[in-house]
Image 1 (spheres, rainbow, N blue to C red):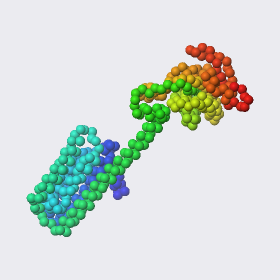
Image 2 (image 1 turned 90 degrees about the vertical axis):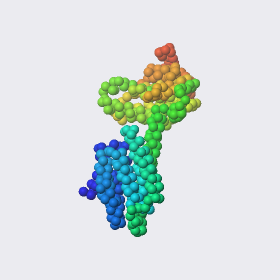
Image 3 (image 1 turned 135 degrees about the horizontal axis):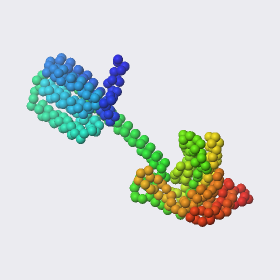
Image 4 (image 1 turned 180 degrees about the vertical axis):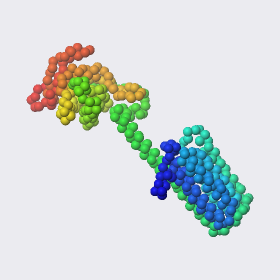
Length: 414
């Protein structure tokens, strides 16, 4: 029984909304503490001969906090606050009347503003008004008691020893209550700040996965359309050869797992080389070099990436017992880059150079890297190239193309 008691007292019931859990715990502790304190005061008042306060506690205070405890479990947190505030106000008025200002019981009124604004925002606008009214009523009561106590002699003149006991119980309990509120406010604030930092970091990570870091920073600062022109950059397109046939032979789960493993390794290679992944479309993979930050070795960096991608694809195919080959095309030249869309926006590239890079891939050779004349001109002498002659490119006519066979050896051909 006693092991289950904490769970009964503090575990939220189905009626408690998630945003009301803090208030639920507060009032669970508060109503139980109030019952204990009123028990202490009932004994002190009985010993002091203050029968009026004894009967008030028995007839009003105890039933009020028992009802408050049960109402709290049903999710009526605002009602519990109003009930507790009215009990406190009535209790302190009577306390000053019967035992005097010197007993210090009126300082319990300080608890009302703490309780009122400890509650979460309610579902109705009236919640805020009710909280404010309770705070104003407690303030007015405190000031009224202060003025009233100057002209009023208490009904009972209790002994200094018992008066000190009442004072000590009040001071200790009020300090503990205020410390409890301060601790919980501090803890709630720290928790909220930590979660905010975690969410911010998660949002930053997601944003940087979608956009290049410099572009993401510009987007956060605002400033309208993000569009840049680059006079010299390189673009890579990669595609799995025979992917449509492959997708018909393997299960959807295996197909997605294959693409995920393959493209994840590609992502790591891109990040290691400081390049920029633009997007994936189905089984196609697009990378750019020289944007959004310019670099003189953009073509070389992209060719190195392409050769590693071929090696990764070969290894993955063997490991998964699902052999496949990739076709990769690269072109160099001017491009336009920018962010488009309002939802699910994307950093994309446009221009003739991008179209030509796509044609280098679609007209390429399985298991090889094919480059355009412009990329060849930048890298000849550093790599072994195999000329394929001129091929017909849609919208461009015949264009000379080259297949990269690897880094050039001393005295090797170009």
